[in-house]
Length: 261
Ligand code: NAD
Image 1 (cartoon, rainbow, N blue to C red):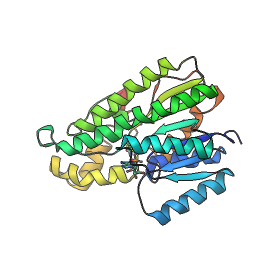
Image 2 (spheres, rainbow, N blue to C red):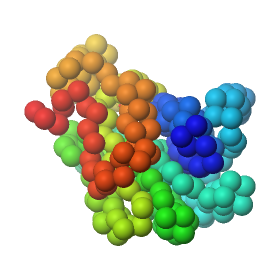
Image 3 (cartoon, rainbow, N blue to C red):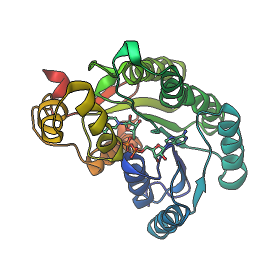
């Protein structure tokens, strides 16, 4: 298969978009490292499924990405067990919804650490190995919020704008090394991350659940459809192809037209 022998690390891939991307890479034959939190039996079942799909190896690494030393250990294990990371997807992320004046300081720190600073650490560990192999793919699951803002999401929007800046900067630094660096910017995708923010948004905006779905989540998405995990994963898969070798430093929107408005 196309990615046989290559290793893909997808952060935050025990659920949602990350798991979808891991499945797409497994279907292309890659060894997979999944990462994130969750029920041990469910994670093991997904790991086995990925191995069965790819015919390669699949490993689970439970590194907490808000802890730089755990990120470093994860990369050491990846090099020892699987020959290093060829494809890195910075996908793990969390959301918190609150007016800025009430935004809990510890939530701000955690969102910046997970959604932005973790990508700096994974990239700095990944690039030397990719340079040696003269090939690499670095992808961030950013968001439409890397380009535009929404009220009450100050930490998330700040982190995602930062991720877009990090992507462009690193793309320039590694442009001649056979490594591409891109952001995929989904609009609203129906995953636990979206489900979990509905109650807080109901509170922050004094709305019903239906109003939040129709008047907030899908209000800015001209197609009036949620993006699917598979649609995002298909773009990630395409970015690993030879045909995508000149797509770098790009912000690729998969947002139903949100950021065109
Ligand atoms: P999700 O909540 O389903 O998945 C988040 C993943 O991150 C899980 O695997 C979780 O275990 C992991 N995670 C959380 N904290 C972690 C930590 N400290 N260390 C390691 N892993 C950790 O969310 P999702 O919707 O699939 O989101 C994935 C990415 O896509 C996020 O970066 C999110 O911002 C982005 N995104 C989502 C949407 C959407 O509408 N769902 C839209 C645009 C961008």
